[in-house]
Length: 92
Image 1 (cartoon, rainbow, N blue to C red):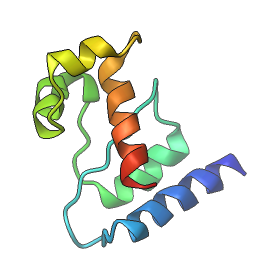
Image 2: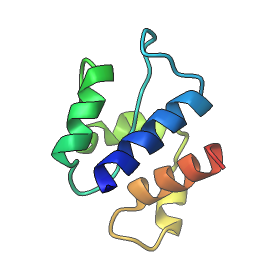
Image 3: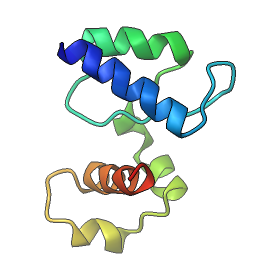
């Protein structure tokens, strides 16, 4: 049931954000690890997957996240938490 919930949520998010499978887009998945079922679903749409931990500088620049923003978050993973918050606001 959870597997289908995840794929449905992603499909719904893609429809809401007007992403078509023929167009290039970026999907940011944040968490400790991606379940195999979800990874398979994502691989149908994304040709290249990159490791989030290697792209901290790029993501901070793209999302305009400063050191001041990061220092304001009381967390072990402030960048991830800020990105989740930004995504929640985007799809609210």
